[in-house]
Image 1 (cartoon, rainbow, N blue to C red):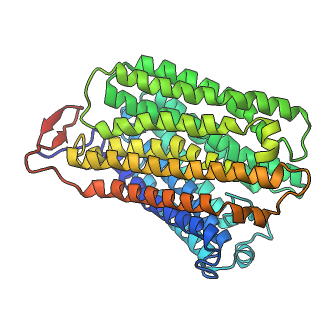
Image 2: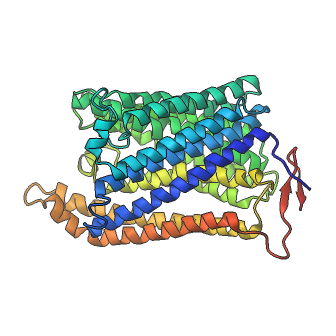
Image 3: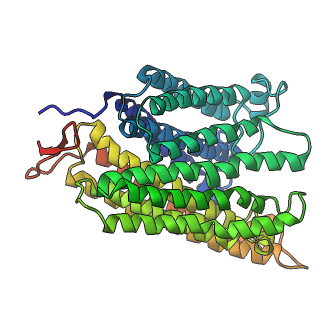
Length: 475
């Protein structure tokens, strides 16, 4: 029997999810290259030097997560608003513009010397390049703003013409906040202190502010669909989580202001509110387990449930525990910019944002392909991929944590006879090789995840097909 989505315009999300997974794969390949360059210094030099590989790795992370957020919004908002998307055509046009801009930017990084790229793209007119995570040329930044405005117009108009729910409004608030904070990437004052302050307005208020609203709404949507728990219960949890996230996250920006030339009171403000930042992530963990325990139905898509619970648990460990480890100023004085920072960054991004996007893809892609859930063989592959990627990430994070502790001990704590940076790096080689092994495991997990899309049902297994209206049938 032919199957359809509840709202046909949701199908545009499929394009965004496919692009997100492709770019995610590219990000991991460049990350593995970087890990090897730590121990094989001239690997792929001069074709892909370390600074270019790192720039591509971090930029692909941002771009594929943005594709994931956009795809999630295009899938969720019509269903939440109970109406078709305002303009599916606009969503498709913006997809191709964003994909082309992203591809051209990455090719520019790889094929043109960065100084020459800055000269070619008008950086002398408005200097915005050269800052970590915000290395994009001026035309790319302008293109991102244009795409973001078109996307927000499309989503906002859909919400305005349909039902308003807590999930869609929180998602909308997070997406608008994401776009507004990005405007600070165009502000590049000559004063280095102000420059770093505005830079953190983008980076911190994305990952520890507006993105947390997006994550909470995505997680709430998946849990509502897979557990059948009353929307009112989930809404209350979500409001509590985002309240704590905003209270702690906004003033928690101060933990980046400790040593960049701003007033000393930021040591207290940043320290106190940063110490509160694990709370919303801990609440999210309680929320996920509570909803699964109270579920009113056994949803056939158990893989999506695993990704959702994994988001809450690993997000708490990465953003909460590993963030708290070095967020207080007396500790941060020694650890800032060390491999401890890298350990926190990897686990926090993976737990909080990678996993929630994969949870939404895991839930929605079967529906986009005409069934409520993947065959159990495919779901088992997905579940294996979750564990392989998570264990690989754990190996990387523990290796980076060990490297960071030794780095602080050898290079930063001694008052006399401290090792130089490069001499210290020689002592960390063992940890870097362990990190590479974790990266290989993570790539194997990702390939396992991608393979699940091509696994059909076993010979004796019936597929679960979706029927408009939320019922299911055996195909």
